[in-house]
Image 1 (cartoon, protein in one colour):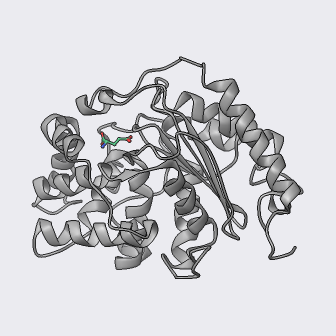
Image 2: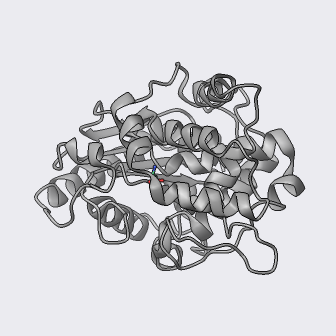
Length: 326
Ligand code: GLU
């Protein structure tokens, strides 16, 4: 396999497929933007974008690629990586497991035997992981989180303060989950501070192009495809990719692994971040969500691209390694 990335012809073929899928699914009106966080429903529901970044740094951008939206649950994957880097696997595994649940993302449940949160991609696990981002004050903890984002994004992250305030004002279910974990000794007693940090990490603004680049970084096992800078360690990306594949798409994760087979994480802001190890990052944005919380158009695009370009991780020949990347 060459290091050169896709040829012009391969790239044109892939880009054409993205353009056609964008045209085909733009009229699809199924689903609604999330409204349980009131400020999220302020988004234009018809925005739609697809982006890919290959490991040699080529970008494919289709649709509303400049539109910023809040990263929401996709943050859980990045903060999980940060916690693993800061504390190591054993310390993180003591607080949160790696079992897919099949339950909804905001289920109020902990493992009966260990008290751990089931996995880092449901809210309980994510809040337990955020609790591990320590610091002398909430500002310092937010700064640690911000600098992680800065490494991935190549700029200071912007937080949507209206969404942050809206989550804070209405996040009582997350509060219940966090206090349950406090009662079981899984999180420390600065629960409100940890929740504030969790709401902040969810309220960071990104574009679909940012997500595709983040996907490419993780798919490149932590080295930035353009600069070579190490953003996250190789060992940690293996764990991030594993939980993304098994738990990243809410309670649709099993079906997703079966039919799409791309490690991915979605968020209720309408984004889906996909990572194709050794090939690149793929991302979609469309705020209309299905009942599970995944972007309706995003699911379709991933399903179709995975089928057409044989991107499933377990496709015997994995031809996408030649098509989309190395
Ligand atoms: N901030 C959101 C919450 O915890 C994130 C949910 C999501 O994207 O799934 O409710």
